[in-house]
Amino acid sequence: MANIKSAAKSARQAVGRRERNLFFKTTMRTKVKAVREAVAASDAAGAQAALKEAVHFVDKTASKGVIHQRTASRTIARLTRAHAFSRPIVTEVQRLPGFYPAETYHQDYLLHHPDQPYIAINDLPKVRALRRDFPELWRDRPSPWKMDAASSSH
Image 1 (cartoon, rainbow, N blue to C red):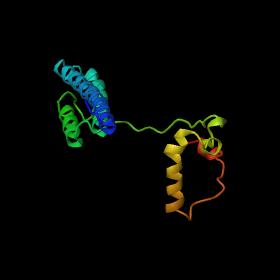
Image 2: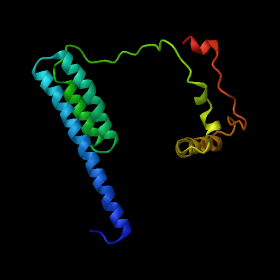
Image 3: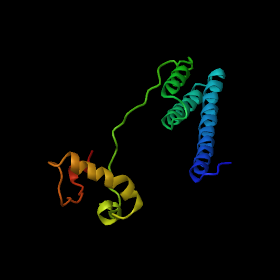
Image 4: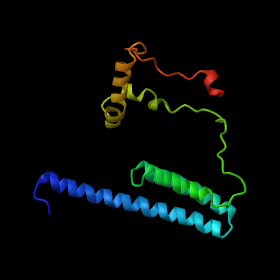
């Protein structure tokens, strides 16, 4: 047991990270196993659905740093080469059927709620960086967002 405050905190954080990593690894293995079982059963539709979930979770596990990005890429490549599919799996990109603006109380959220923790932590540093890096684009008075007829038809 740690006697120093910072060492105790570090030990608590390590336990939390270990639990999170264990969750991601076991869930990833379960999803990969589901793909392999569907391929072994010659269930193309099931394998395709399982592969979609597995690829998402393997990528998420790598993005959290639980596994190396190369390991994730290798795992995904091996799953897609499992010969369960007659053609490569592709994602169809479709045009958005319509755009619906958010409710009015969501518009210009930063202007109306500058003290909210989300704004202070996530948005204000980006706004400051924008002002610093692109002074020619900066306006002291923001223009409120308005939806015009042209943008709603796309």
